[in-house]
Image 1: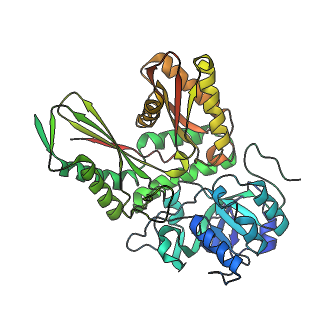
Image 2 (image 1 turned 90 degrees about the vertical axis):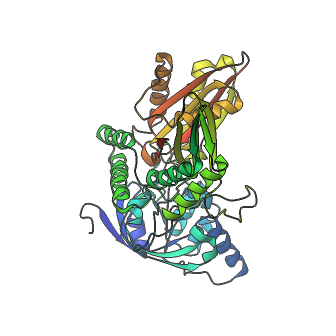
Image 3 (image 1 turned 180 degrees about the vertical axis):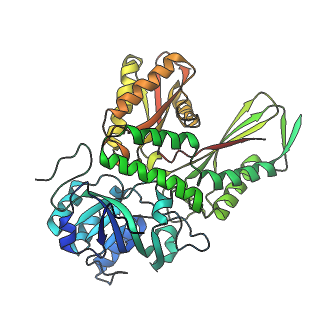
Length: 184
Length: 281
């Protein structure tokens, strides 16, 4: 099932692997990722401010900005494409500072996020928005690990295999987005 | 007078909710395929390949094309010789949405209160229903689930008449350039030109129902559609904002006479998952 054409990256992501990636690289991810979007980020930040334990250890991990559709019978998850990342831009730098290695979403991000990637050796992957069937089909398992009452916004641990993404921003200041310049 | 039981409307809405979210219309697939052939950028081709693959996987697995299965937007063209029986129309449509979104494993994406966002309505109701009285004894229902990412990049301007054609093209191209990758390009753009403040928005939404690649029947309007498409594609935003020639697949303009002092312009942005389906009862 593993793609031969594209570079394979195993998760969790080492700093070495993260920093070997260049904006515009087409890669396939295999390993654990954690879903969190607007509401979960708000709660994660509250825990950080209160000095409490987070639902998962951020170190070397990748967060997927995703609120999946319900799982039909016999499948671990429903349609599961990315949501727009900029809404999480307020939170992302603090998480990268605490060891988060990567995020997956869609669309451009703020320069604060790009600077955080450069400072902390992180990466931002773009998944193709609206490819929820294809992406959901590459998720082998899904387990809610925090805040089930948030429904699609709950935090889930996923295991992805051959999950197609493109490097949007790398840890050297590079960007794959049109109309943006690399960071100095 | 022909009688139609609203239970049939419920059934039709439920079925269209389930099918439209997993079956990308053939006109959209064709447009994506043609764009794939035109693109020279490797990343743009990769994105379009994934979208074509996605359309196939959605059909096979019955997983929705996109996890954002939208707010249910329903256009009803009701023949004036039809008498609806069996209950209120809005309730019948909502019941169809409730059933379709539950049985189709579609995401429920509606909050009760726009400011207090803590309560999801739980069944994706209420549907947004636009009813129009037409001639005849048929009831035509168009179902178009609308995702949040692209809807958020939509806009409405009250231009001055002096801004004219150039002002229209520039406003749209600037809006799409600034939206970049956020509305999930390649896009379909619905444009409402003229009318009043609220009518322009409705025209823009209705323009999205037209099959892709079918230009306006009015030659001047078709020419404007081509001009806007060209300007939008010249932004270079490309598929998912990662660069390329295909920022929009199609532009559909609907126009209407307007006040001598006004030039209303509405832009409804639709992502590439341009889901729409219709049935005539």
